[in-house]
Each structure stands twice: as C-alpha cells, then as structure tokens.
Amino acid sequence: MRRVIPFLTLLLPTVATALEVSAKSAIIMDADTGKVLWSKDPDTKRYPASTTKIMTALLLIERCLPSEVITAPKDVQKVTGASLHLKPGEKVAAGEMLYALMLRSANDGCYAVARHIGGSVAGFAKLMNERAKAIGCTNTEFHNPHGLNNDKHVTTARDLALITREAIKYETFNRVAATHKHTIKRSINKDDILLISKNKSLKHDPTADGIKTGYTNPAGQCFVGSATRDGYRLITVVLRSEGWHDDNKAMLDWAFENHERRLVARAGEPLTQAEVRGGEAAQVPLVAEKDVYVVVRKGTAAVPPKMRLEGPEALDAPVSRGQRVGHVLVADGSGFEQRVAVMAAEDVGAARTMLGVGQSLSRSHLMFALFLGACGYYVRKRARRMRLSF
Picture 1 (cartoon, rainbow, N blue to C red):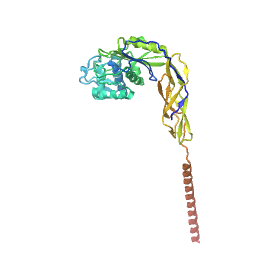
Picture 2: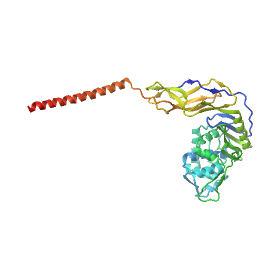
Picture 3: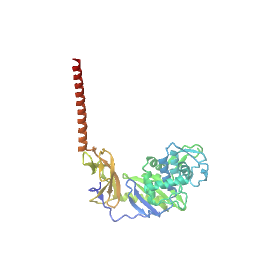
Picture 4: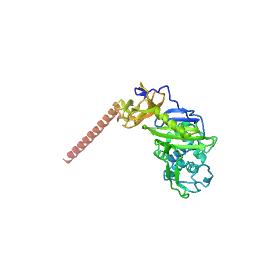
C-alpha cells in the first residue's frame, strides 16, 4: 500500500535569521510534529543536571496512580542538593510527589520514587534507559533519577527534547510543569508544604507552559522550556548555558517570529485509498485522524508536494469504518516528514465467493431433500397402518 499522493508541501527559504545563544548545546522543536526548527550542537553528550527529572516524572506518571503512597526509605536523608526534607518513613502520594520533583526539584523525592518503582536506583535507571530508547533517544545514558553529577550520566539537547515531547502527551505532566506554586500534603514534615517553581519564565512569559530548570557545576545552567503562541507549541532545550533565561527567550522569540503553522489536511478529510483483498469493494477511502499541520518559515511559497502512504500492500476484508489502517508520511518541503495516522472512512464487508454461494446452495438443497424424505416416510407409514386396519 505505497503510492505518491498530490498534496501541499512547503519549501523553506535558504536564508535564515541569525540566532545566537550562550549555551553549548541547544535545540528548538515543534511539539506536535517533532520537527527541529533550529539547533546548535544538539547531539553532543552533556550532563543534564535536574532536567533528568523530566524522565523521572514521566515514569512516575506512567507507573503510579496519583493516590499511590510513596514511602521515604530509611536512608533518604543521605541525598544531597535540592530537597523536600523527607523524613525516613514519611509518606507522600505520587500525585503530590510529582509537584515536588518538578517545582522543588527534590532530589530526595526522586530517590524515594526510584526505590518505590525500581526497587533501587540501579533498577530505576534501567527503566529510565529502556524508556529513553523506546522514545527514540540514541545518546542518553541515565544512572540516577535526579541528575546529581555522575560522569556517565549524560544526554543531549535532541534527546531531552524527545523525552519532553513524550512527557507532554500527559495532561497531568502539563498541569504540573506549568504550575508556579503548590501546597502539598505529607505525613510528617508538615511545616514544609509550600512548593515554588524554579522556572522564572512562568512569571515573566504569559505564553510559557513549562518545564524544568537544572544546574550543577559540571553541567552549568540547563533548561527545558515550552511555550504556546499562535496556536502551536514549541519545546526548547539549552545545556551548559551562561544564562538559560536569556537563551530561552531569544530562542522562542526567534522561532515564533520566523515560523508559522499551516493546515494541510482536516480530520476526516480523504487523503487516499487503500486496496481491499476479498472485499465487497476493491478499495476503501482513508482519512486523517486529526487535523494535519506543518510548521514552516514565514513567507514560503507553496510547491508541488508529495505524501507517502505506509502500511500493508492491501487490507484484508472486512474493514470497519474508523479502523486505523496505517500512516501517511507528510513532507513539508524541507526534508522533514511527519507520520499521520489514517483510518478507514467506510465499512467494507467480505465478498461472498462462488464457492461460498455453492456451499450455501448445497446446504439448502440437502435440508430440503431431508424434509421431503421425512414427509414421504410419514405418508408411507400412515398408508401401511390404514391397510392393516382393513
């Protein structure tokens, strides 16, 4: 099921507006499509500091219910750095602990989460690395849940953007990441309940919606940010920055000033057709599951586009309306392709073959013959009784 389909793609201009940041590595990514709008040394491995906690938060959301109780280990007070000041045996609900990780950047909270989910720091790090690999990260190696310095604990700007793009699929994560202040409930240290986010962009930029700061001496200033303007959302990452707030602001302003989002297909709008094997119809129209947009440089002109349909050579009947059947690769003219899920627009039942019809007729004939035979037997038996009676 592969063919080229006429559609709208857009050609990026060759001249780019200059963008300079102090960060050694940085990236700007469209949150919806994953397209990289700009980058600086995005694949060099660097220390992530507390931006590590985005992955810890992701696993906490995916593996724990909000009401699930997390108990601080006996040795929790050995953890250094930013802290929730947990006491051994203290109990905090997973939903509250999520705020502690993202706002307070609590290293002891991360340790408690790691022990609760993974059994140990090493066990949790294994889960972190497996999840990173599943997301598509290729240069990430986590060794702890909080980002305190470890020579082998590294990631890249690109990988952090990918991890963040996965995390923001959860509304719970978005709500917490965009929160400036929150009061938690806890079982022991009840005097320390107010959490205030270290992300000052939430106060200074009304379009900001996250996400996480980070700092250690070896890592320098690190930040993963996000903002929504003009109806679309961008993810930013800076590693080893001399001023993360200024870098992040410059990146967002540049990206939104020079790019725009354009609609190329509406949800439910036919994109192509797929062949159907053994169906009442030979083909079924396919439609996009959601509106399809591309992010392009402002002022670009439309050019003849191409789309590629991924999936099997043909679908096997029956096919149900709304059934997801594959993906379409939508190109925007810059070489970037996004995968868009498509589904069947109509029901296509299985065709009745000649063999099936013949079998159906044969069964009907057999039943009729049996009925006639039974009737004949009854008539003959009744006639015989009548003769004997005379």
